[in-house]
Image (cartoon, rainbow, N blue to C red; front, side, top):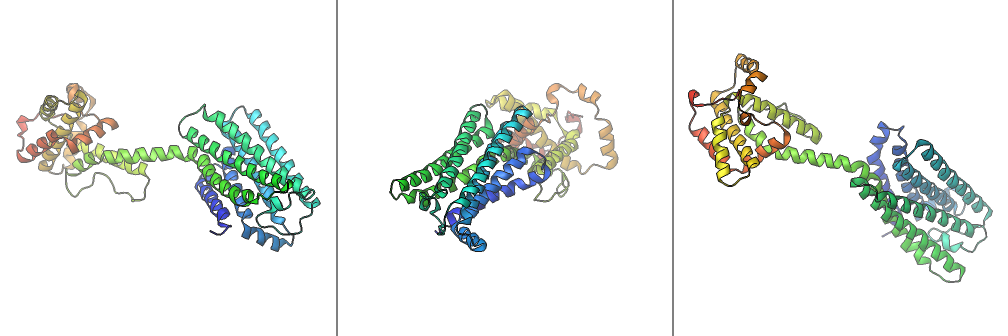
Length: 415
């Protein structure tokens, strides 16, 4: 693989993570936490892009200054280190004066570091362009060598401080935030290793040894992996809860499917709810399904027969089901039978539907036995949907209702 790819791939990963955060930034651009996350991801990508050998050569040629890109990379990475510390400070929170004061200290400290690095580069002498081994090649050059060591120490300081902060905080929290913090701990340990390897190679040059491979080959690969893990660590606590909510919505939508399909058979060809685009969010799809189920249950209410429920409930208990499962099987059987009765009755007329609506008030509901009321909570409907799909008792009740229409005087309707 081309040496530049080890830099361009992490840069792309960082900017892909930034793309995920841009909508949130546009909505909440005043939020310092959102801004800090975006700055960290952006500067991380810029640092990798500028450090790629192809970019290094292009910048040096464009400016006419040998190794100009080295100073630019050092300044960018130092700004990235500062932004990571600022992000963690804002992320953890605390009294506003404390957060502001700590943010100012780290920002000012790394601002001074960047100014000193640039000054040392100007004072130093680095006439030979080095695309990958600037750190070790100029390790013993006055001013330039000190600049390299100062840059590495600044990066290592930020990595160690971030590791300690994330490690302490990870022990206090749970869920997605804790997972994200542990990922950041791993990422910063890899960053510490990056600085340590480069510093080891520089010290080796001071003693006349050539350990450049640590700096030119191993360190870039470690920091590339660290970048991908850090992006995941920063974005996971922000995207994780949303992903969990989406998963729950999709799961609930799927589990309600048997009940939705059962009620859709009331009047074949007619929809329980208005169609929506396939690309609508899972939450909208779930809302539509739940609203359609509610309308379907309202349509079959005049045909609900408590005798069917009671018989299915008794059969379920006799089959060894728990009381809760037997109750759901009973309600599922009653719904399945009511759907068949509603199909035989045909679509209701507007006048009949209005009459039923006016006669379904709280007073009439109070006259029914408590166990005859149809549960409408989400967990109950999910249990009923499961029984509709799996219970042979429900299947038998459905088949019996389809084969033998019940006489009006033999039904115990639930109004």
